[in-house]
Length: 94
Image (cartoon, helix red, strand yellow):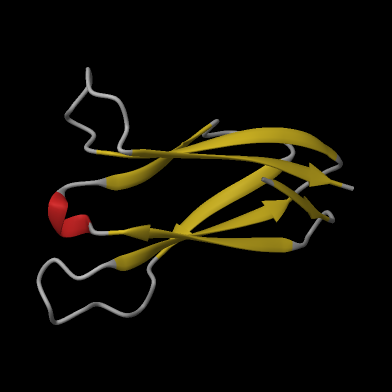
């Protein structure tokens, strides 16, 4: 997937999650001069244990350029196990 934004503009990425299973979304690279990524709460905690939720990432363009970001959905303590899900996006700041 490719996303195009301008410097100062914010793109919101919503990924399905279920933190009660121990899985969380992480991303690389953690630092970039082209974009800034902030994770925010979805604001809608469920009263039902095991119910699906969303992990929301706000990606802000800082300066012109391209960066590839990989989001992985895994349990952080399971080092030798492949992620349950992987999403890759290219962010173009123009």
